[in-house]
Length: 325
Ligand code: PBG
Image (cartoon, rainbow, N blue to C red; front, side):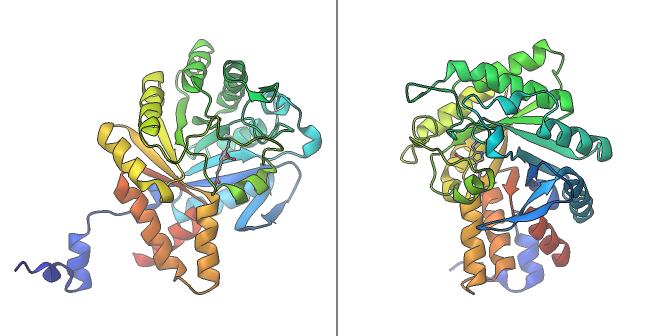
């Protein structure tokens, strides 16, 4: 008989034997930025997640820095009157996201700012690419995604994060960045992004639910894992600096497999809005102890092989981690 229980006999021994630790530096906090002044408004159906105007966002960033978080992921949210078929607002120079990045980097130059590059929040149809005859166009979308990425690079983003799931998006963006003198701007690519049922609260934050068709012709079918591994490999060869696996909690096996195949590659697991709200709902109804369960879930994402965890719980988790010390 082996005495495994000796490894768990008390807290000190358990701590000594622990293999996986999460820290504030692993966490990336998503933010939704809107036009206006002094706005911090909770998003309906997305508990403790807010729309912020730039001024309010800057205030909030001071708080997260104090808690030890140093990376954020930005999404722009615009009124439907600014949306069109091409998502033109997204590549407008000096737009809301551009201003947000520039003001954040001016005030907090050491904060790592990652900016989401996609069309879904800017198009009237809510799709991540251009549409013609009810088909989502791949190659025609690439130049638009590159324009958006270049704009964010000019604003000072450390990373651009293409999430449209168009083939060749990393290559196209890398080429445009190089050509325009932004070799230093890195790409955090949503490489393995599944057509998931857990994006609901996020889509209500952006009002980006597709008005017709679904995203299954571009996001990965959840009945496959090999496509996810191969797409990630393609993104790596196209020049991605960090790859995202999304969702994370429901796809831990995908993280494991990709980490095993590409051990040196940095991986971010995206604990998505629906996964977040499931924990919130369970905590609110007393099914789980929020603090303990959240730390367990985030640790499991790291244990699977993620180096970073994108999570709406980042702020709260940072607080929990500070308490634990
Ligand atoms: C699409 C995008 C999505 C999310 C981020 N960017 C998914 C989608 O609407 O298909 C989801 C994030 C979340 O649910 O937390 N560009």
